[in-house]
Length: 187
Image 1 (cartoon, rainbow, N blue to C red):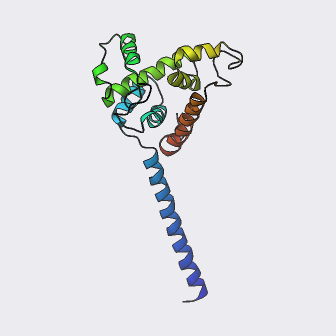
Image 2 (cartoon, rainbow, N blue to C red):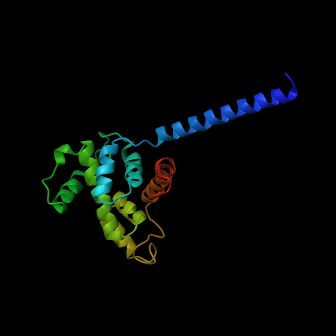
Image 3 (cartoon, rainbow, N blue to C red):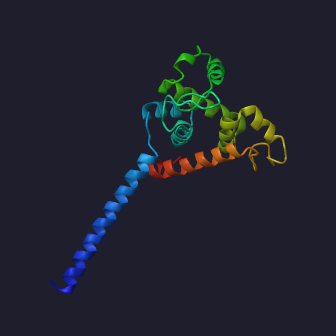
């Protein structure tokens, strides 16, 4: 084999290796950012006009897609709803409270997605809605009235609770990955 042929073989091997590496990285990323329960996410994201990528991002951050997840604060399920919040949301929707079904993936995704829409409608900004999802809408409403935390009453320039600040950052990081992997920045 001459030098030119050997070089061509090396280039082909490198191209094959690069292709396999890119495929493996993409497959790994999709395992890190799954889209489980897609039938429910698609249904309720569409019904309540919430970006699918955002719903997946919240589920990943809240429960890691474990429908039986429970937090130290008493939140339950994929989207970590507190039973009292679930009761309140069901009243807003003029429905019977499904408290006994809080770990059911469809129920949890339905009410969690509705809650995200409700918070967005109230605050007009997804980051502020996410802060309220984590810290409570009353607390965030108070922050928006305080010039230390908001200049315009809509956007939070500073989130005073580190856990909530980290939560919003985590959701936005998840969202960036979901959009890149599945939505190509369309949402």
